[in-house]
Length: 424
Image (cartoon, rainbow, N blue to C red; front, side, top):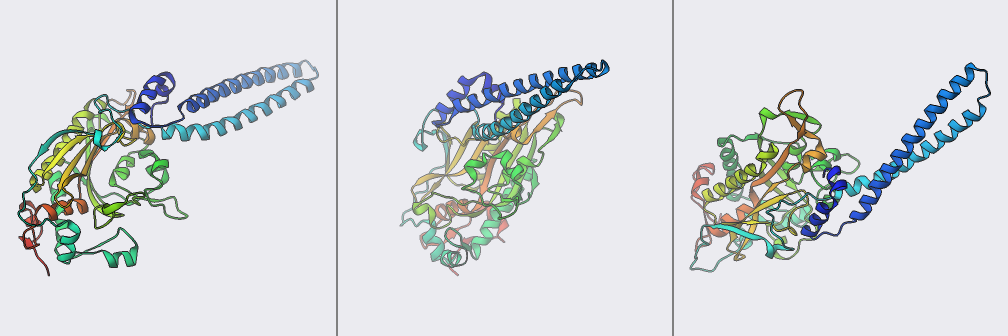
């Protein structure tokens, strides 16, 4: 959520933000409704003042045994006008609240201009795509040839874009999770396993819910949503609280399954385990002081780079342009790993600084001393590893000529010293 004073008093900043994001948004309607609301509040305050004055007059007139019936009629009429005004305010508030909640975050000034994926700016590459002197298989063929994934039976019991992982691929999946938890634990991040279901108040404060309702799963007849990422649960953990500034930054390593509808995706991405409704993820999340948040962002993307360096997976880092930037984010880096089966880099890590946007929606503040004015924290999130998608990069980059898959050195101890995944 944006600061309403900023929206009201510096409309050019909002207009520039919408232009940079290439978004159509009824900003003039928002300003009109905000002005209407403030006028209504002023009118009601004046009416209440008039009613108080007349009440005082009635009290005085009664002491003088003067007829007060006319004055009483006046107060009743004013009370009706106040009630009508309050009803109008409630109606305006309903529309205004939705519009304010739908306003995206202000992009950082360093965010590149652009509309789509081709306008993202590559910052650096690491590692060279492997040169394989045999026919490259994608993860679907590799996994099915080795009996590691059963998509047909998963479709039978759950529908499209679900899967059964089998055998050594399950071991490799949990190896990634355990390596990721050790990796962040060793760097001082607190491991946390959040609830997998959130109330609307909690999840609605950390996302723009109107944009996500086609993406996240709602539990019928209950005020609960399945999480799309542990970020949303961790962000809301301190809602309506004031933290001690001396505790910041608070850094968490969230481990959870993630559930997403993935509406609208199409093509080969919907086959295999690249774009699925359920996956595991180890997430970095930080509550930061505002003046430290850019450093936190750089720290988090470095953690992700170090992790994929340890896996020896080639990758590149891109800065998302305005048109690609998520609405809650002020600045986002993507780590795109090399997928030999697709012969391209694809996103496996998203690392974002949300500044005070989520904190305003969730009312998460901090102060250094008990009697100081509190201010909003900054929140940041970054994937460390989304395991199903990372399993694909491992299978494709570590495939051998005979169709087996070499296990990355750093993961061997987590798999019982498994060297190679072969057909069973």
